[in-house]
Length: 260
Image 1 (cartoon, rainbow, N blue to C red):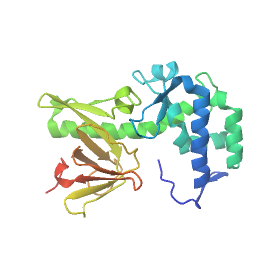
Image 2 (image 1 turned 180 degrees about the vertical axis):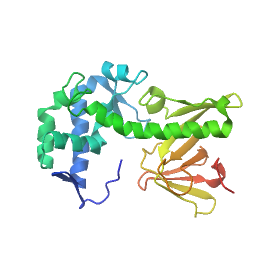
Image 3 (image 1 turned 45 degrees about the horizontal axis):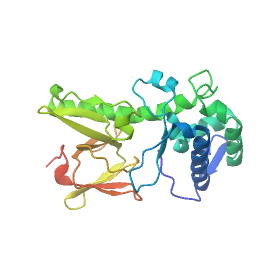
Image 4 (image 1 turned 90 degrees about the vertical axis):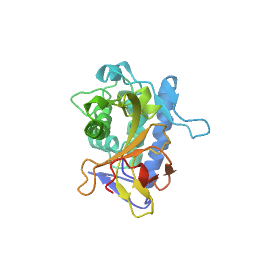
């Protein structure tokens, strides 16, 4: 997901436009709407002392589409800009106030299991739209799985966890694998850039959610990167998170695929 940092900047999707301020307002609006509609399905993933992170138990439809999935795409509606674009295009929405009014009017069709615009169908669907963005992360995880197999051999047997399963959402485990018969875990995050100029550390810039997961390894991936490694694979030790700057600083010595 892109970062919205300039409040004066305007984003245009065909004939629909919205500002950063509109987008942040949309997040609050959707968070409140989802909870009003599905409070009985709500699960708080936040650790003690952290800000609430609310997701929702998956519908049967979602579990059937993705066996092992435990949490619904509804928990990702609030920040999915592709969905905003699809709604605006389908309902021919011109401005942000019309977007909110439309969502309020069609909320049952959009955000309930049997809603006309939730499941896959002849028109756009909430499920298909958010799954298309999840699949980007899944391609990154597949790339890391291949990296692990190449590094530690086929006996490492990397296994990708199901998207939005308990291990994925709660424990932050994207991949489980073996080194010398010992089970290891890995969290995979998108790689925007990496700075190797700082003495003894690597500063990673990511668009992923910042959270201090207790996996054994961290992998940062950009399969479309045209310079440097597409995957930077680290031991998860001595990591410093800067949530505001969206950076992660890691000792260079923890880089598994270092060049020197």
